[in-house]
Image (cartoon, rainbow, N blue to C red; front, side):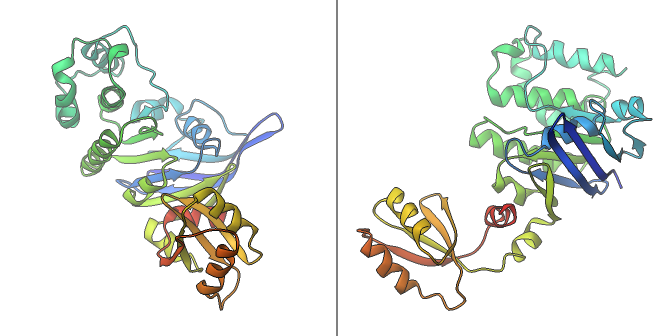
Amino acid sequence: MSITVSNISKSYKSVKALENIYFNVKEGELFGLIGPDGAGKTTLFRILTTLLIANEGSATVAGFDVVSDYKKIRNNVGYMPGKFSLYQDLTIEENLNFFATIFGTTIKENYELIKDIYVQIEPFKDRRAGKLSGGMKQKLALCCALIHKPKVLFLDEPTTGVDPVSRKEFWDMLKRLQQKGITILVSTPYMDEAALCDRVALIQDGKILQVDAPNAIVKHYSKQIYNISAHNMYLLINALKSYKYNHSVYPFGEFVHYTDQRADFNPENLKVYLESKKLSQIVIKNTEPTIEDTFMELAK
């Protein structure tokens, strides 16, 4: 295993940030830690990259213990924190040279590893990092995390605040890096990104809800979900939440995802109820569950 996490717990005074966290990541795997802000993702990343010490439990990264072998881990991992943390006053090239020097290497020595990414920002290599766009900062940070050829790459919410095109480009880059044998652990609050991982761990309030391949997690969802729309989304949501047979009601794009408590649910009865609440243009259709639906169900 490239990463093992065994019953890791971490508290800040009375607040439990992590509680009995457990999972393994195989070598060469693209593994996702999926959960909302405040779920404990960053705390776990800081423990695995030796920046924090857990209160309980143990973990290894690339075969090294996160406490006793912290120096070896720091030489064998790349870490891209959620907040851009490179030197704003240095240029792209100066930042990259700086990090290469720290790890006793050069850009030339490991250029093949970063080439696909670096060529996109190389025309701006003399521009200061603080003047870069969000997508370019992201690419520079990834280059700096890769320049010493790490065995394991940690990416903490790398696409937060980045435009959709840059998000897609970034995940394409991760897939190419994975083909080079690098183990990747990435955290994200975006449920749609979960489907791009080999396996994921769903985390909420410092606890692991489920660990499996994305399609396997979705298969565990047992209820029929309905897409419901009407002329007024706000009134629709309130009406569905007031319906005594509702099991779950969540906004989902232009629809509301609805599940019913009853096994013999009849959509026509619900439509009559919604019409009694002065709603019109009502559409109720079957739909397939997503990993977001599964997460919301598990989080209940």
